[in-house]
Image (cartoon, rainbow, N blue to C red; front, side, top):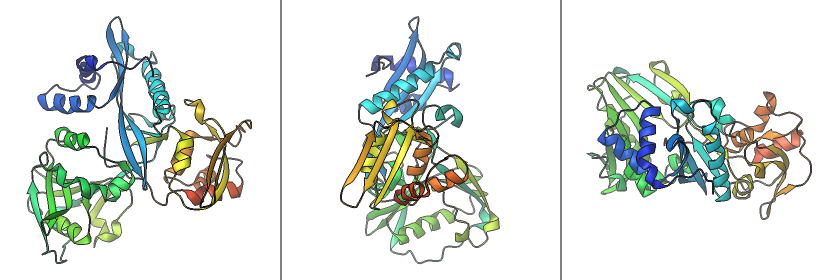
Length: 390
């Protein structure tokens, strides 16, 4: 393990650096949710003259990647004191954390970037987007579908997360690269988002859907909707539209990057913004390919460049015939002319952009058409979804 890992005894000092670096105000609520996250994180730091100048948190999670579970560490709170700026401390910590992930059989890593170009240096790439829909209250659609078998109840968010766990786990929010939310994370969410409210749909007294939202003086903001059947979804959206007289605008911050203009009567009434969200990187390429969720027979070769994790560098051969999967890294010298970076490979294997598209845009060169076709044949069919932030 890296010698940059700090003991939990540094919690208060790291918290004070967090407040200063992000110009955040201390409060009982902020301290509570930050402490909860810290207690489940691996803290890294660099100390100068007995004072921590640079720190990051590496938080162990598990993600459900299209039906296959992988260990994933989220990078959070990359922070430096002003006097540490330009010394390369954050870069040292990022590289140390990634190497520790690899050594501890962690397959993936996610993070929220302050600058995409900066984190591409460490092998991360944009793969998650969010879509924000804004609609005036007088343009809300009418939902006439009969939902009399579903009862929607407003409940306290912080004390009712147990009702949500099974619903979330059955939804696309959890199954397309999202978190397998641990109990501590469910406890953390209401602490982090203290202003959010909850409504739960029940059928025959069983929870079958929920919506997490927030209300301001002029806005009704929806953050998360999940359901196990169509009736519950209709009932939840009917619940939302019944607030039409209490807010001027309705905003849905959707973690699903698909555009749904066609689902409203008048698409011009909706203002839509697609926003880059979080980044991901493959930490252990061998493990990711060996467990990658595909049943399509394929064979391809890859020359991979990873500037941070040398274990991923090399000439890889992937072969899968429906029964036996072979992933081998050979001693064949890298062809740097046709090599693909770990960033671009992450983008392809996460289903964010096809190899054919990257070839078309000049991001991959020298590949045979068969190699492109066979790699694209195995990739997951939809873009990934991440509802969480860390």
